[in-house]
Length: 524
Length: 100
Image 1 (spheres, each protein chain N blue to C red):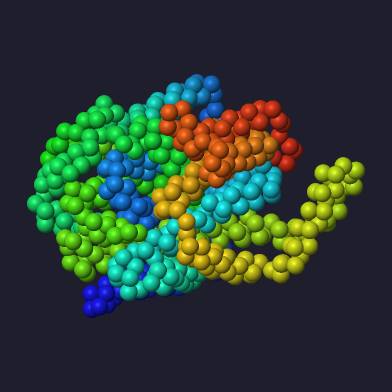
Image 2 (image 1 turned 30 degrees about the horizontal axis):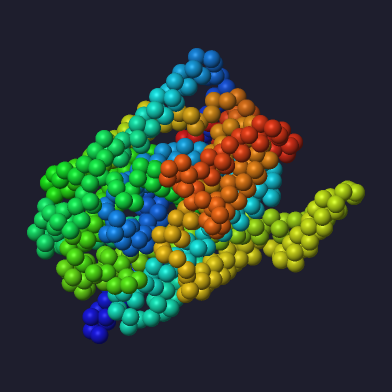
């Protein structure tokens, strides 16, 4: 029991430190929505790099990923390197820099806002926000589930799942609601550094206990020789490429990552971040994933519903150190979830709530039309206007509503995590694939001025429907053409639909392609 | 801080267009190469171990270092290619400046 006390003390102490940073950030936060969501677009290199990095990391870095390499071999580190280190870095420029320029010029805060303005469509804005929230929810739930399991594992069940997951959720709500983007980014920076330091300490400790990397790999060669050969089993070229491509594109459309494309202070910050990206990915994932694979050779037994990293640490290192690494993993999980809550709340308030309340300014009357569609549309608009009038009071409500959104979102996903079906990786993969479907239509819109509103509806709607069908309907296959995932096939479909339908339709008068045509901005 | 959107209408001509197209193509090919060899396909099914790690892990680590250098070179010499528009449509307001 004393062990449990020490372990909980370490985890608790770490949480309090992160909260203290959040409070300091709060004292520096203006009371404007732009500052709350985007810290007034003033992030420097280290903070932007670590906040994006820490946001990318999740329970998967310490739990799901090493569990996979423990069971299937270490090739996942290649998937991760290609995905986060290279494809994401290229998209960081192609999507991120472009969005940064467009955002600087027109003051956008969310992806939906950027698209809705360009295509003159509230519906598109709301659609993008609704799709994003739909995929975000299970992912936040997954993080809470990971946190709850980690605390159960750490304390051998002395702390039940709901207390662990609930405690983490409560803690996150408090500091996200209080401190906004600046607090989130600062704690992310702390968490990123802690994670990086601890994973290397863990590898050094375990390797010195078993006689170095050569000895550890030799033991792996005896038990699982297949793990050392590149490819085989789960890892086909199609699997590696599908996974890397789908997740990398998906990452860029996750609200919390996409919103970070708007927050850099200057181009210099974006440039430095790009160059550091591949190195950072290798520094974190190679040790974490190799540790999972080595654990297979060391004959570590993982308890049911448990994770391999805490198991191997328990066997070879001290109890307090396991607690510290689990605290880092919780940090990884929180640094993803806090940003997701914040961005989710901004999508909710800016793209779904505010457009509806703004409708209150408008006359609900449309020119009478005889067609059924016209009448349906008119009644829908009248309904939206009355809801808008009901909700509306003044702008102060937006900041309050954003914080309320954080609380509601986190509470619902916590409740869902109590009975969450499926494994971590399966749910995670589903969300990444869902977000990946948004990426290509958005890239087409940013770079091709002939893109039309109907092209966007078709590209986004069609790919989402097909992808949803492949996930939820057993009749729709999950893989195509010898192992390419449904997600990648749906992305291709979305691209074809966006381009094809844009070619077949013409732009409405309220679409403005010139909004995305931006020249270089020197922000320093 | 003064932020300036540079006017590019005046710099716009056909030779610029061709040059930037070639540059964009070159950088795109470089990016594709960096991505294509992050996984050492030529070592498929190879299980050689060097200094305690499979050779393919070492290749990956080295290649990611190279990728970092390539990205750095891009930020020095290629930044803006394909993204910053020299399209006259984008410069209806030739010079925009504002305080940040």
